[in-house]
Amino acid sequence: MFTAPLAIVAVGGLGFYTILERMEQDKYDPHALPSPLIGHKPPTFNLPGFNGAPGFSNTDLAAPAQPMLVNWFASWCMPCAQEAPMIAQLAKTGLPIWGVAYQDQPDALASYFAHYGNPYTKLALDTSGLTAINWGVYGVPETYLIDKAGIVRWRWAGAITDDVLANGLNPLLAKYT
Amino acid sequence: MAQAQNPTQTVTRDGVSLTQAQEQRAEAIGDQLRCLVCQNESIEGSSATLAKQLRIIIRQHVVAGDSDKSIMEYMVHRYGIFVLLKPPFSRLTLLLYATPVLALILGFLVVWLARRSKTSPPPPLDDAEQDRLERLLKS
Image: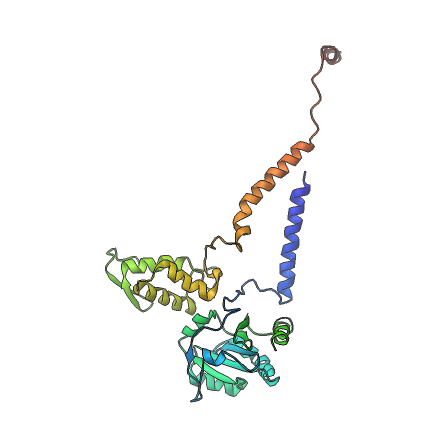
């Protein structure tokens, strides 16, 4: 008569172990949210650029020549600084990465770039953070993959690590190229 | 925030001026929304910058006369149903809502199986056996 309860406990334990194991391997983050933007075009926006350079709007993202990333970051954000070498490395491979500085100040941004370099093909400033809300951004860094049709295919909240690159981004880049 | 009882009195919360009644509506909406930064807090109870911005947006929509439903839809459109502290009943949450019923069914099943496997009690003793039992007990 104890077989059924024991079996339930065993299944539950196995499930819990799987969750912990996947969290350990960076394959599962219980705090990560699925983005409602996936499968859709980004919402309407038009943001100014940095240091007199033009910013960009949603129409600029409508039909990129190749798949590209939109990286939300801020000079005040520690994980963004940790992610900076990865973004620079990705940019070197020829992948266009457009940056949006979230709730940032031009002088703080300038010293951030002086330290970490500016890997962005284009840069826009979301000083109020209201465009971020329309995208469903809930923290920085956040990275969106946009395919050639201008559709959002992937969103990663948090810094892109080697594991995220290998298991998340690279397969999708291969798929949408 | 609950110092004024007059529903038409104007209050200011997070830089938005609105009437006491509107503020109460905004608080009721914010209580039902999850802060995306501190995920176990409501937007109303969180001190995160994003929560404050969302509180402002809720109040602006309330002042503009938008319905509760349309404000909820605004949030779900951007952050998904995870933003709702009480998940709606849908195909995705079916298992979640069905769990109590499933647990009850499982419990009944276990009890039924346990009862079935129990061996039936022996038949009552006939008169001869009863006599023998009494004799044995007396000796």
